[in-house]
Length: 512
Ligand SMILES: [Ca+2]
Ligand SMILES: [Ca+2]
Image (cartoon, rainbow, N blue to C red; front, side, top):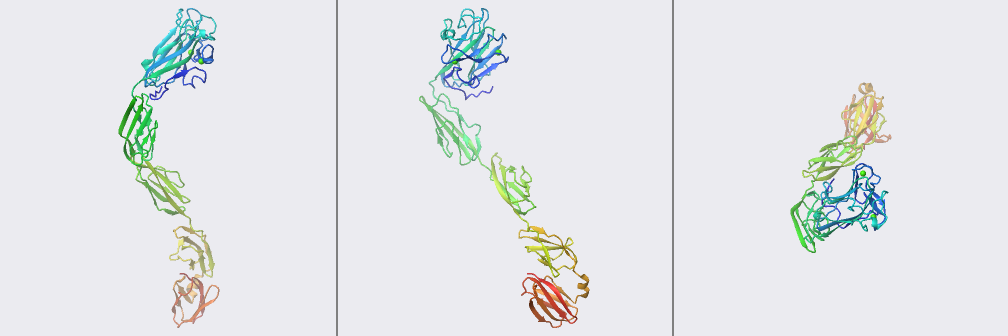
């Protein structure tokens, strides 16, 4: 049985059994044989009311068994005298058969007991309140109770030996002699307060060390009947209090004195505990994310620092919970929160956001004349039959061979997307290489387009993609020519070149 020495009822205490039951009134009813034991009975003859506690030993034939009714715990500190009184009623069934009522006291919440009263009928009115009767005894009149019995007086016990103690309980014990019923009622525990100075005492519920930001709740264990309390908490946000058990918050780390002055009409007492409360620092936790933005589908590494252990709050894409360094691959931009623990056992949180960048929309390829055109993006890389084409990094591409072409595009953040394959079948390698009158390069062109002809060049004409004439110029019958394309806006043009052998039209892309 756990004994809370500083708790317990104070005096006066009264029990008339008129309301509730044993349990709800704080009593413990022990009936070891689980047969007949203490019970609430309807009676008359006592005041107030109609209910008392009964041991029905008239119908309990288990001679020699015992039943216990144990009071709640009392705090008798500060009392100089204590008295217990109670009323009882008992009637013998026959001479020679008697039952006993025993009263014991505990000052350790019920661990051990001291017997302070015992009574059994000796045929000379040592316990019975009413004349002998062979029937089930239920008192109806005051004369059948000790209060007006002509046989015996009620019990009044001086328990001053227990004054000043805590964890005090008293216990009514019945000893079954298979005689007749025992009743008790109107139990009174009273006391007189000692005329002594109050004593200041308190504790911090084990919170002698707290982390910054945590309140300290003080428990007031002062005794000898103080009536006023004056607390001092130098360094606290609110540095004084007059409440019984205050809650105190400190704004900074450090060690703090606590003082309590208690007083009553007789005087006062001071308890100063120096450096009693220590407020510990909370750690400043950091998170680094590398990289702090990723393309969807790729991950980043999150690393916490400045603690000795870490806990990551559940979040999408998180690779671990209890680790300093965790991976994260979320589908969307996500905020991550870590709790870090310091060497002092204090915690703090940090948070960081990993930005997830959408990949660009899947590009599409179209063909104009012999040139492939990709939908707009920030940058490009062309592939043919799955192989990267070196240098083919423009929006336009002039295929040199037949095959399946893809283009991978990149947005400004480097996130990529790849097109579906585009099949090219109309490149005539033989024509181009063997029968072509002229080769042009680079194609796509930037600022210069070089012409190389098998015979001298006479003239060239440039048309835009709508067929509009852009430029017409004669050449000096050289086999090579460098044409300035600076003035041409990006787009696809047709260069119609006349040599002495004939005329050939070549689509040329100009890209800036
Ligand atoms: Ca009663
Ligand atoms: Ca029993």
